[in-house]
Amino acid sequence: MQTKTIPYTFKRCGYFYFSRRVPSDLLHHYTGPRIVQGLRTKSPQTAKTRALLAAAKLDERWSQLRLAHSEAFGGKLQKSGAGLPEPSQDRLLQAHVPEPHGPTLAEALSLYIRQKGKGRGKTFHAGSERACTYLTAACGVKPLINYSRTDALKFRDWLIAKNLSGSSVTRVMSSLKAVFNFAISELALENRNPFLGIYHDRKAGVSDRKPIPVVSIRKIQTECTRVDDEMRWLVALISDTGMRLAEATGLLREDFVGLDGTSPFIQIKPYAWRTLKTGSSQRNVPLVGASLWAAKRIITRQSDSKFAFPRYNKTTTTNANSASAALNKWMKPLVPLECSMHSFRHSMRDRLRAVQCPADIVDQIGGWQTNGVGHGYGDGYPMHVLNEWMAKVSL
Image (cartoon, helix red, strand yellow):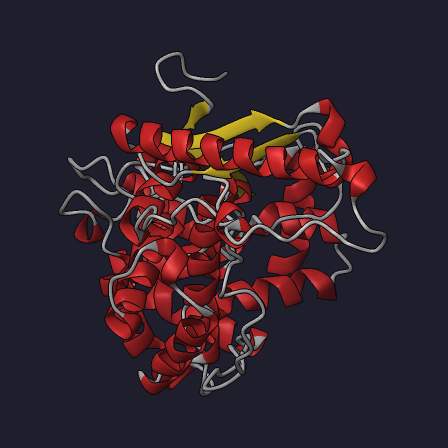
């Protein structure tokens, strides 16, 4: 809807846009029935000036087009082959509206987080902000439309010079592309995203995470039952569930359900102190083997804390990094090189494959996204089915 106080304009996301219908007799000169162009300003006064200037130039241009296709005065007396002279100011009449600076990178980031960040974890916000901070450090502070392909290539080289791995460069570039794409679409900007199609070696500096062999897992579980403390309960809990370390460290005692029943499980859901990586990460995971032992030890322990692992929840956020450093150091003599706590997650996928577990059940247990529209219907497999497959793994 056009604004009443400023002719030929409408607003979207706070910015003014010029809009005017093409006269019917001139439609054959244009590809569409309406001319729409961003004025790239939030100021009503500036928008009014630019809109009236654009309208005046269009009126003049349309007059030139009509004159060019009408019979001029004295046309019958004109010599054959003599044409109308090109107006000396025609180039000026065809000039675009003066280009303002437009939205800044900070404004684009704010718009992106405000619209796309609802219900997303701190990783989403931190990743977007980090990417934009890196860009300003590498290429300086500019209006969004002033970042060029040269800047994009310079930014890629800057990230590589920081000795970031290929996967880290990919994450930063993906976050930045998303911010630019969203702003360009929402604000109807005419520039192309300069960060699209930038090549880099995604495998540079990336070491494959190896799964922990089953024989090593058994040794670790035996050691956990021998030491029998909170840190070892955490290792044992992850060893036969394949949970992410952050998911496990942020658990509440009440998240353990039916420990004395036939199908005990853990509820994994987002909390203020610990969010989840993806939507599919919210799930129920069966408790079997060493994980069931650890769950029972956690619940039977006398504790005033609501958390399953109080030592990693002493502040407003779960300190999964501290847990990772300590547990990886403890496990190092017990596992092959390049294995870590996260390797339990890789191992669980392999262990489920080894018992020929269907792929969609594997995805549901691990919280991985299953492709296909149909997989989004219903509540998934019941707990007793998941428990049967996990029991095969723990044997």
